Structure formats: structure tokens, C-alpha cells
Amino acid sequence: MRILKSFLFALQFLTVFPVPDTSYYDENDSRSSLYWYPWIGFIIGATLLIPAMFVVEISVNVAAALTVVFWAIVTGALHLDGLADFADGLVGGFRDREKTLAIMKDPRSGVMAIVAVVCVLLLKWASLTYIIEHQLWLALLFIPVISRTYAVILLATTSYARADGLGANLSEQISFALMVTSLGIIVIAVVLLLGTQGLVMLTIGAAGFVLFRTWMKRILGGITGDTIGAQIELLETILLITLLWI
Image 1 (cartoon, rainbow, N blue to C red):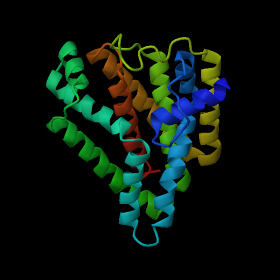
Image 2 (cartoon, helix red, strand yellow; image 1 turned 60 degrees about the vertical axis):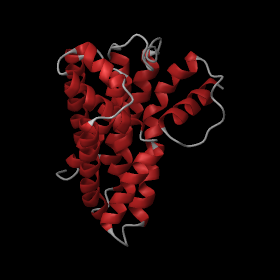
Image 3 (tube, rainbow, N blue to C red; image 1 turned 30 degrees about the horizontal axis):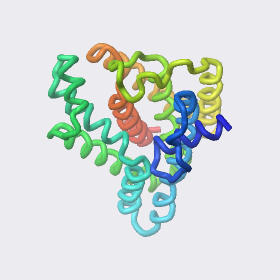
């Protein structure tokens, strides 16, 4: 029962798919949902294949655009919102930790938020035109998986910048053995199904994770929910661009 509840909690948090009422779930369910984040990525990736595979015969550009739209809709633009807040805070706060955190918490969006989101969506669309044209379906399926895998690692290995943040207690009391097992299965699946391409994607993802984590610890002393969302969006975009060369 705990397994099902944690899965539904993760599905409800990371997507817009309807699930049974999760309001009565406790903190243990919330923490256990972390194990499911990469697997929810499979569901998101599979959803992206719908417009990518079935509209491509009509127009590659339209298929790419619809895939970007599906991507935003299925995730409820959750990570795009994090990216927007992160961009505003990064520029507006400029090396002032408290000011940066305060700006990121502000629900209003500034110019930098809009610029960051537009740039990411444009890069995703442009990369997807190539990916769809060359029918790199497995790679597209795994990009949401890999990005959420590194999000889990970020949560599990990095302190939270705010004591009262949404994910402040999310990674506490997580079983290291279960975490390694869950992530290990993902890594094995990526390598077995994508081969060298998968290894390159995992390596690029690891490099991006290390750089982003180091950056966040330097300017914020840790992470927030917004920075996790920003990492997911940026890593997805980088992986999409990477596929143009591998």
C-alpha cells in the first residue's frame, strides 16, 4: 500500500494526470515518492512520443511544437515555473543570498523569467525538429527520466537553502540502499537500451549536475524547489541539444 501511495503522490506532484485524493498522505509517503521521480519520467516521455510520432508525417515543425506544448501541459509547467523564478532571483539578487531567495519566492515574473522560459522553449523546439526527423524515439523517451534521476540525486545530496521550503524535509530519512537500487536500475536501462548514446547522455547529465550543484551551493548555500525545477529544465534542454551530435 505504501508503494502505491508514494507512486500516486509522485504522479500527482510531477504531472497533471488525475489521481485519487492524496490529501491524507503523510510525510513518509511524500519522502518515499522520491524513488518514483525517474519512473514518472517514463510516463512523461511516453506522453511526448504521441505528438512526436503521429504528427511527424504531416510536419516535423508542427510535431516538434506540439511536443513542446505537451511537455509543458503534462508537467503542469511546474519546472518552467521554477526556471522562471530562478532566473529572476539570480539576476535580481546578484550575489546577495537573502535577496535572491526573496525574489525567487515572489509569485510575480520579471523580464528575466520570461526570457529564460522563451529561450528554453525555443531551444527545445529547435532540437526536437532534428530528433523527430531522425526518429530518435528512445532517446526522447529517456530524457525526462535522466533529468529527474539527477533531480533526485540533487535532493538527496544537497542541503536545502530554506528551512520552510516545499522540499526541505523531502530527502530526510530516505533509504540510501533503496535510492541506489532505484537509480541503478534506471542507469542500467539507459545503457542497455541506448548503448553509447545513453552513456554520453548520462555523462553529460552528470557533468551538468555537478556544475549546477556547485553553483547553487556557492550562491545560495543549497537548493530550493525552484532550483530543482530549473535544473530539470536546463538538463532536458542540454540533453536535447546533445542528441544533435551523438
